Length: 138
Image (cartoon, rainbow, N blue to C red; front, side, top):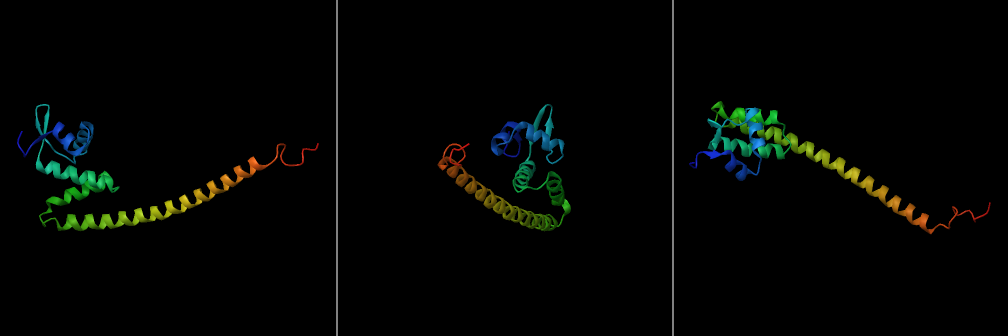
């Protein structure tokens, strides 16, 4: 194996993915390894694409968005279109994540308030005399 080509095992080790993951991306035509019988040999291009796929997934891009961005690489415009589309999608994703963070902060604050109420309710329940606190009369 040369520095140009990597086996599926070497790719798995290098990118901390499973063979199943690589086969899945191949089935989705995101990667196109060289087939040598049953062996898959991944090129430098495949490695670069996998790096972008994994980064895109981490940032929450869909596989279809990732595919569209990867397909823009070969337009012959020095990747200007690919970079500008990636930038646009990344700005949209960042805005989505920031909105989600605001919503999460609100939910966290509400849950904390409920927990504090629950703590007070539990504390007052343990301080109350047996029989419901009505003096024990019938």
